[in-house]
Length: 140
Length: 140
DNA sequence: CTGCATGTTTATATAATATATAGACACGCC
DNA sequence: GGCGTGTCTATATATTATATAAACATGCAG
Image (cartoon, rainbow over all chains, first blue to last red; front, top):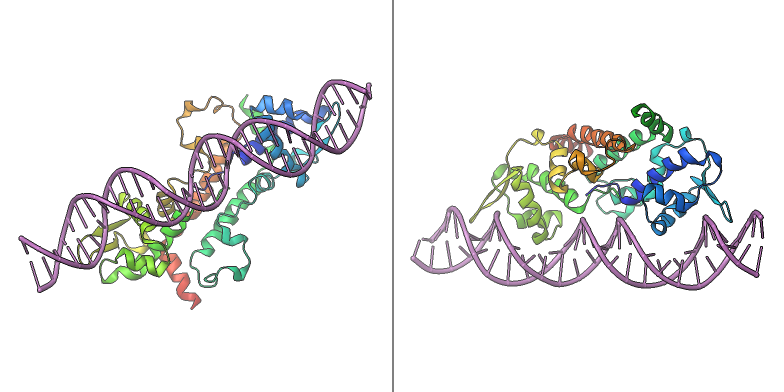
């Protein structure tokens, strides 16, 4: 049904939480999970994806936790969602090899999906964590 | 994972098939299902959605089948996919009542999803069945 | 008015994916 | 050495998507 999954939505909220709270050093998973109301175990699996793509860094031991690797304005939402969603191409065939689909060359609908992917990409690439935080500040 | 579902992709191919084949009168479900390689029973459930939204009309009895209700240029893809997908809002909260989500008013991410929905809508509203058919003709 | 070829409806089965949980482990500071 | 953190692998549960089945309704041909 073409929905951003819970993972993607959570990931975005986690990254926003970090952007707003990691200036004093690493933030513990438990702390974020309580603030964002995400179960810690589930959040673990999301953190591992964000780590794999180097969107965050981690520190073990006491006073350990997670921290952003860049400044908030250097995180386009596309990158975060693409990571947590495992891709944002709206149909599977876009991620396939050219010759994997027998009708690829004559398929009337492929260009539609390519174009759709592009507008989604353009839109989400134009927004960063900082954009959102600034908008939030305006609302208060 | 934010994917157009099989229903949506099938629906689009079915509508394209009708646009290209219904000028001699109604086209039988079986005929389309064979041409498009969609199992007849599954296709039935898609047709019932297209019917409910009046995107196609049907005729029973011998020589019965399905037919478009408008000209191909009067079918924006948004309408077809919105019908078959059961909506194209990228997150559930956009379809909810304002007060159904407790943090709706202060949620930093809602505007992102609203904007995303809008670019998807704009893009798919700008393409019609006719657009695709003409593009296909160019490829031959 | 009978029979067949079509569409229609409701129910169910199966498969895939998303979401969530559990337990054992690794690391690092104190 | 022990506690507080993150990491990894496996599994359970829930939800949704996909597909199938069977009984029914309609309309035309003869």
